[in-house]
Length: 108
Image: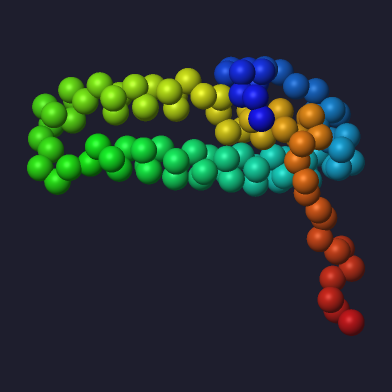
């Protein structure tokens, strides 16, 4: 997904538009929550992996604050759109796959 088209700040959205794909605003919110959580965990894992290269057991505080490459990597991730905004954009563009569990259950 092209993150350049996703707004980096919060915008007002019509609840009816968000509820339209599922027919229920609460189901839409759960889908958005789960997707945003997936995105956040993936970003956290990716950032941790990149910052692991800079980890040194003998680092003192002065060395940590002066590491410009580490600071640039962190700033890059700070400029990225928030996971909830990415999830909403994917949902509105029909790029999310979701399924609803069988409501009948397995009582039989």
